[in-house]
Image (cartoon, rainbow, N blue to C red; front, side, top):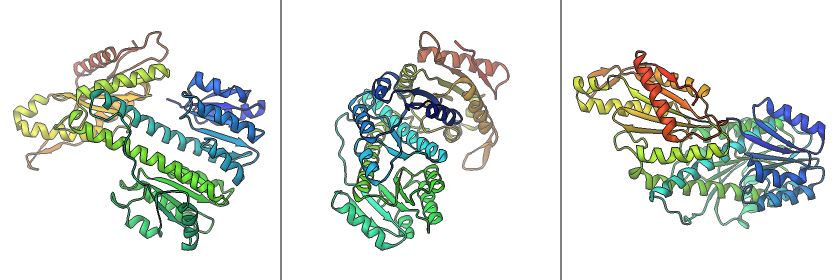
Amino acid sequence: MSARILIADDLPTGRIQWRVRLAAAHYHVNLLDDPAALPAAASRERPDLIVLVHRGLPDALKICDALRGQVESAEIPIILAGPDAGPEARLAALAAGAADLLETPFSDSVCLARIRSLLRARDARAELLRRQSTAQEFGFCDAGAMFQRRGRVALVARSRTLATDWRDTLVGTLQDRIEVLGEHAALSTADHQTSADVYVIDIGADRTEEGLQLLADLRARAETRRASVITVLQPGDAASAARALDLGASDLIPGDFEPAELALRVKAQIKRKLEADALTLAVEDGMRLAATDSLTGLYNRRYAMSHATRILREAAAADRPVAVLIGDLDHFKRVNDTYGHGAGDTVLVEIAQRLRANLRGADVLARLGGEEFLIVMPETDAGQAGPVASRICRFVAERPVVVDEGRKSVGVTMSLGVAATDPAAPVPETLEALIERADKALYAAKAAGRNQITVAEAA
């Protein structure tokens, strides 16, 4: 489902350009001609991201303050765009709660990459908070404040002197551990115990490729994939900025920054990273036994039903679809009867891994019992869920499962039923009704010969 972006620009030509720019990227765009009306519109529409185009920074900062003062819009990322994006203007914008300040005219590629980056971060946080809330309902996640450890910041620059200057800038402002590292050290120390929470990487003109490669390497490693990365680049280097953001940079800072700007950006990224770590640990530690199936490691029925109900409720409030897939292994009783229950368990574990490999991080995958699996896909309609179900069907059937310590192999297939909500329906569909439609579609797939999918008609 397309993200909702609310844009305030008092120039008609500007609004036309924004609509063309973002519609081409398939975002849902709402336009305002009066920036002063932005706080009320944000409270009413609950967008995923806000863009405020201003002609004067002081008025834009007041609007930012108003947005941050509203509960409904306090966590929505804000991009300011205006004629001045120098060091002092950026610092003022960050202090007012903006995520970034773009100087007009700006590169479309940088703008779109920045939007993608902010939406990824927002979606990741929303999913963690959703899972924490579900866990609290079960009573296995503490709702109170969580301990916040000191953060770790690694500075990687083209010269040790430059990185040391950065460290000196931060030491007096942050209470976190700050160290200067070379590229080799940044990767060789990147394990669960010693990896940094925030990396500041220089991708200046004389080391652009090296810096971008380091960013890609950090994002490719499980130990550092969740770290925040701030890239320092030459002012006006739009090509490197867009590449860095799409490689996974959390934030950008032009090399002409004031010391206070670097401190603000690092502090914001540390806060985001430590909050994500605390939420993840609180949920994972409590849920591991209470919410998972002991054989496959997937969510169990109880957790999945509660979490899926929450997803449907949020989707209905935002007029967004949710898809449910019910999958069932074909003739699974024959596997147990022919090869034994141990082999059957091996098959279930392997199929669970194959299912997980074909889904997004925000999708919910659960074992309902026996050989039956549930998949809940937020922001997915029937037209999008059908191809996913077909891919799963092929992926399950394409190679046998090795059992009996490698001495035998078992061919396995799966049938799936698909159903999705209709955001335009006058009454939101319940989870039970959605699962019932997916279940009937599953029976239809079985009746049609198995090893295939059926998509249920709209309710």
